[in-house]
Image: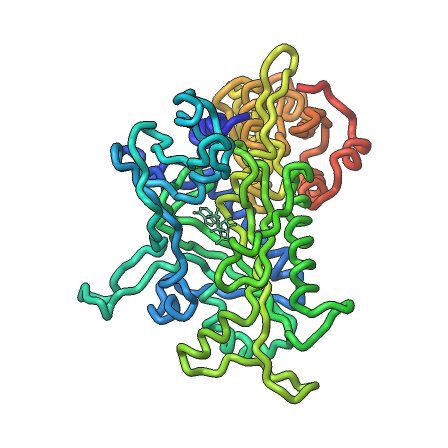
Length: 493
Ligand code: ATP
């Protein structure tokens, strides 16, 4: 499966649309459609439930996107949040110098009588020692020397466009947490170690956005700042190093829990030369995206850098009183920083399957039921029979009180199943002639319906009265096999 397959599925089935498409699109922003918003909300809800709701040492926050401009001076973003940029002198296209350097390039080597061959990414030519000098797009223009380009979107707060009014759209949600450290600590009476979690939009004026929703200019992050006492040791290690390891494992396990294959995840340790200005150690969780291994989440040890900087710039004390030691400490912080959009892409890519069923192609999203945008589809076997349609609609209304449930009668049943498979709906409920009987002939129905499971395509017949209880089991984590054995099996479809 390549990226185009996913982009096309996303558009066709209402997951993701190009932003402002009727005007030609922006190329760097995407809109989440009716099914996309459900999947995205599910990702965020599960992250919040697992990391905030279920833990006694975590609380949440929702800080504003626009902040005092001093925040970005203190955090280092005004000076350091830059990427090296090069321009093509011929076609004027712009590239991120470090990403260009990573990619292989076609070289016409003067030391080899101008023969052309490919040089692997990150390396100079072994014959002449030159690095790439020509544009990868047009192949003709010389590239300029790299210049540093700040990725923050600048704007003005208030009606006057003057220097004093300059502020930025936040490039990460983290700073909203640091500047609220004291507020949260005092209002919630927290004891170290504890974490503050936040989900929200961030903006980065990326030089070369691309790869669908992998690199966008308006993104959403799920970030945790986990504060630890730097004087503590846990299991014989400094607390910050211990908790860093814990969070790396916790976050990797989270992706696994919701279905990502172990072989498609790996950890990558940042080299000393690539560490951010605030970081003691950073480990990325990488995913094998359709375009190759790339960062899904970064987990950094930000030390006490941010709290100290904000204390210095604001003149306020941002410390924690260690009662045992009777001393004030500046906590260290571990930051698992995940992208909602990249998680969306990873979950989708990992769930995508193409199978052959009875000589026909079946496209399937094997999404974890908790992630699936639609949990149940209620389908009438015959839409010409009013009683069937009415009963199906009643069942949909009943189930929709608890789960996202749709009704569809716009095609024959086989096609309706395929449509639901393609968007990852784990269960279909089919209402048929037997369910409602034939009132004209005085034949009563059995008020039973068929449940079909997406991955196995197995079907069981169950009483309508038991549907809610069955779906509470199935959508509450019970395996299909445990429910199947209680009910008669039907033919697969
Ligand atoms: P990259 O090296 O890919 O530019 P980064 O190291 O700058 O990413 P972080 O600053 O660590 O990224 O941001 C944390 C997370 O936010 C990333 O792991 C990613 O999931 C998400 N993220 C960052 N930038 C973008 C973007 N432009 N589009 C989508 N998601 C992003």
